[in-house]
Every structure is written in C-alpha cells, then in structure tokens.
Length: 253
Image 1 (cartoon, rainbow, N blue to C red):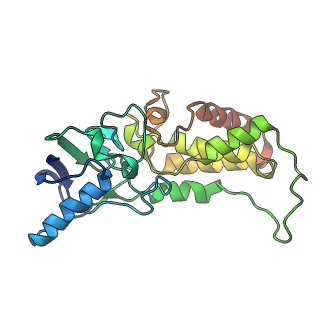
Image 2: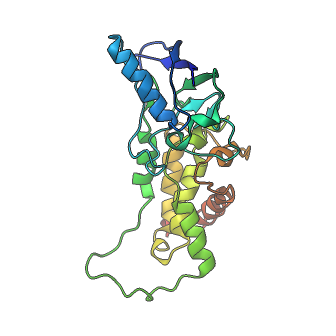
Image 3: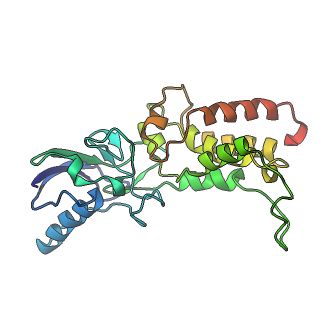
C-alpha cells in the first residue's frame, strides 16, 4: 500500500502548528496505524529530518497513550464500525492510495507538547482529587466478607475498563471529560469499599474536572461513540445522581 499522510507538526506548546504532507510507501495492510507511523519516522530519520512525535506505550489497547485524531475521528476507524484504540487500528481499514489526516487531541485541557503528543495530566489531577478509596493496610480481607451483587459487580467492572485515553474529550464539542470522570466515579460507587467517601469523592472530582477547564456535558453522546472500551453513556447519569445526593450531605459525609 502507498499512503499520503497529512500530519500536524508543532515544535512545542508555544509555537504555531501546521499540516505537513508525507508519502509513505510499501505499507503492509497488517501493520497497525502506529507501525505505519514508525515506518514514516524511519524514513524521516534516514533523510535527516525530525521524526513525528506521538504517544505510545503498550500497543495492546490497554494503556490509553496512543490517542490521535484520524480523519476527524478520535482514534480513527477506517472501514471499521467499531471504536478502537489507535494502536489496534490496522492499515487494512484504509484503501491503497488513501489520504489520511492525523492530528492531536483538540482540547484546551490537553495542551500540545509536540506534534501529536499532548499533555493529559489533567486526568491525573481528577483522579488525585478523589478517584481512590482509603483503606487500612494489613492482611487481605476474606473474599466474601463484603458481598456485591452480580448487577453491581458487572457495572463496576464495565466502568473500570476506562483507560483514560481522552478520546471522549477530543470527540465532545464541549471538550467535556464527564465520561472519564463518571466512569471512575461509577466504578467506586458500585462497590462497598467506595461508600464511606462517596459523597465527598463526587464533589472533589467534579470540582477538579471543572477547574481543569473541561466543558459541561450536554448529552451529545459523541464521547461514548468513540470510546474504545465502550463505556456506557449512562455512567454520566450515575454521576449526576451522586452529585445531587452529595449536596444534601453535611460536610460531604
């Protein structure tokens, strides 16, 4: 396959960026999208040019580092109807001779570091605000000490699959991070260990979300449509219910 790439190049957060066109030849249809970018960078390095900076780590759809906007869609889809991570998007999803636009996440809370790499530490600060449980250390409790219903266990697991890639923010017209925040809140809200801090957690995490500059949710649904882990949109409803309930708790308890 021969591919035409239009890639966003930006030296740093302070400089202006622009789209630069590259030709990538001899692309195997079995390559992942990131492997195709590796092929481009090998060619640029041989030519003495600056390679394209992009985030990646596990390349197994687990870490959430590989997010870029491909042809206007977070993570891209090619011919596939199913959302996926960029590292699990294969070049067979594109036609030979295709022109592909590759850009970084476009959101104020995710400033560009260089080229396609963005700073997603805003998500870390939301987690630090309350996305955890405080427990005493020591011997592990007996497995059945705190019974959890199958329904709640499944819902907690579904929410916990969020990898924090930021596709929801990139796809949302408001640049809201509510799907991410709601997934983390719902995960803990369904478990007994998450109950003592539940009212205070929701206040702190929503407060951190807003202070980072993320927009509000208007139920457009683009976040869930591009989520590679298929986090359900109704976790935002769980967040809203918990937030309202927390307002009637004194000192968040």
